[in-house]
Length: 306
Image 1: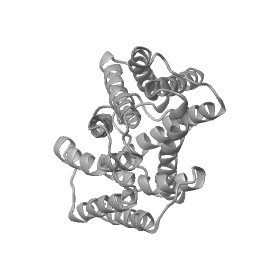
Image 2: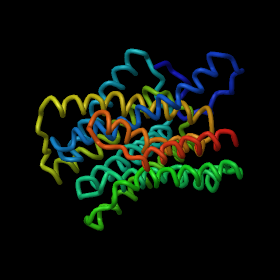
Image 3: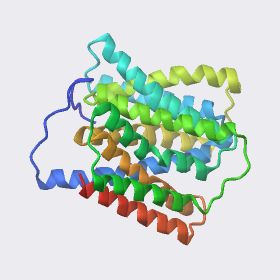
Image 4: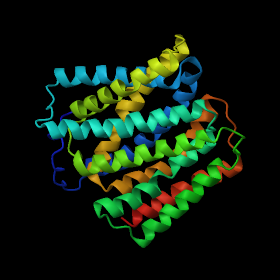
């Protein structure tokens, strides 16, 4: 990772188009979708061996340690003002701590994977509306149709996994996770779009770890059953999913609007289902495949309306 710009500075000016830039523009979204979707599979593998908050504490702690080393070795630029540190900490609490903490707590309370994916799949709609109200970003007719089609695709992908009877608190945790992701995305776009990826993410992960670890100790007694499966899931979550996926997300946010980045989340339920079928043996039916195709077409429609 190279230093991109000072923390919480204005985004750099756009560069001219060339083949390398065009390839990056195509590959970054595809790689982001794959890395982000893999986190659901890794989380499912790790949760049976650790409490949700305990697993998150280890995930955030590992990411913080790696990012701190990269920042020190690469002499990354750190925030220069106290308010810059504060902005990064807020993003860490919202996008990392609140989002994943609430999501994992909901899963532990019986929130089904289908409903969890559906709730997080609503992120593009919520972010687009929030960006329109808070950031003043335009939402054209074609983009709105893309959002509607993507939402329908998400519903089709998850329709084959009906909602089972569960604690009413579980969906509430899922909604809280969605609120954390959306608010963190908009706050990041508004205040820290030009942060250094190494030091900025380090501050965010450290803040999330400090917030979640005491809750894991108090509420779960730090429940961790070490083994090969937990170790592999933790390494993937802490390095590939937390550092890789979120770094790509921030890079794309600099290159486009927050609502355009959010539309990529329409593809995540379908890709997660495909990875679940390949790695966890989950069956992917015709209805889910149709939903995945519809979501992909919806994202293409929204991109044409950019």
